[in-house]
Amino acid sequence: MRRPEKGSREAVLIGFMGAGKSSVGKILATRLGAEFVDVDETIEKKAGRSIREVFASFGEGAFREMEKAAVRDAVSVPGRVVAAGGGAYLDEGNRRALSGYGPVFFLDVSCESVLERLTGDRSRPLLPGEGEKMRDMIEKRRPAYRLADFTVTTDGRSVSDVAEGIIDLLANSDRPPRKAENG
Image 1 (cartoon, rainbow, N blue to C red):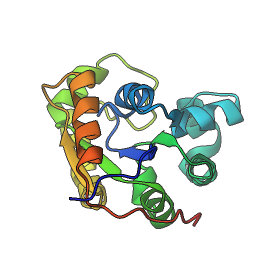
Image 2 (spheres, helix red, strand yellow):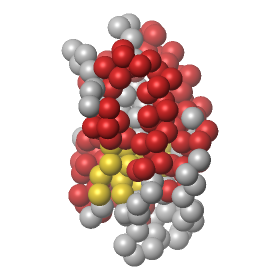
Image 3 (spheres, rainbow, N blue to C red):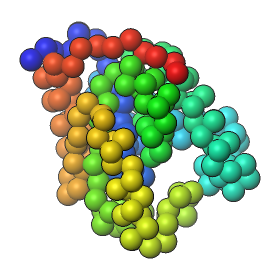
Image 4 (cartoon, helix red, strand yellow):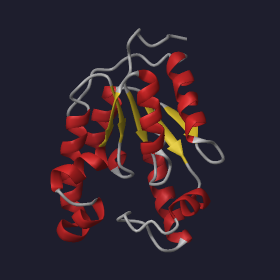
């Protein structure tokens, strides 16, 4: 298997809300000596309001446009670990840009784990109140998520363990580097 080039620190984390993208991404970036970029945090800073408020004030369409700009910005600089929002990878242009930037890791999480992790969290804009609706949403997104280079299950694992697993995958990956596409 081909090892990543020395100093290669790019990685992209995708998955449903509550999968651990931000938590894992911060640890992963620290261990790789990379900058961490959370696409949702970038949107919040630029908009001056929470994701939930962006959805409420401007609608999902406007949010998705902001997300596209934030993804393009995130992949414009080498040496980053990028945590994409839960729906970002569903968009073809975002998927090309993120996949072109570095290896993409789908953090796979069960509906039960999401419900457990996010109980009481009112900051999530699309968090359905019922498990069945959430399960449907996860299953609708799963085909796009499965286009990632790697799938990493997060259920029953610590954030640190997931980050270490990704580091091992990076070190043993035969995925050739790709040029970033800003589409």
